[in-house]
Length: 165
Ligand SMILES: [Zn+2]
Ligand SMILES: [Zn+2]
Image 1 (tube, rainbow, N blue to C red):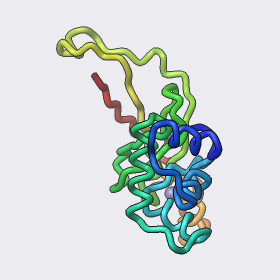
Image 2: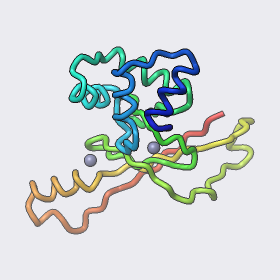
Image 3: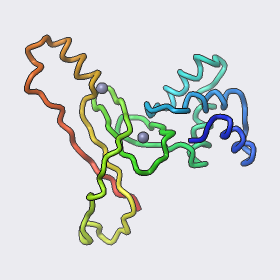
């Protein structure tokens, strides 16, 4: 995603509204690695600008996605998540307990499927979601359950691939 200043310029060029509320949303998203939901963006923006509406947040996120500045992701956490990192080379780590999402750069170039598995699809890209419990959830559980349960437990990572186009 571009900087808030560049986004304001881009929005003007494309004939889209630039308001202080929208610029506040740009700032919330800048450098944001948490893959926030619309509600989380709304809460963060509202802390700075109490008059902002959820509708404005949705419209701005929608505009940003249409302009290719952010990506809307369905990572199975129950709500759309928005990613200002539109670098197509990255994958995601998802906590199945609290829904925390982080970018993952892993060399998965070897990930291929055979012609018969592709079923005639001209496969161009694949995203891999690694699921498990994040460090915070693991720490919280360890603290709650006492020291006894700590050893021998491993986060189980399940990979799900989605092929597009
Ligand atoms: Zn977690
Ligand atoms: Zn991401």
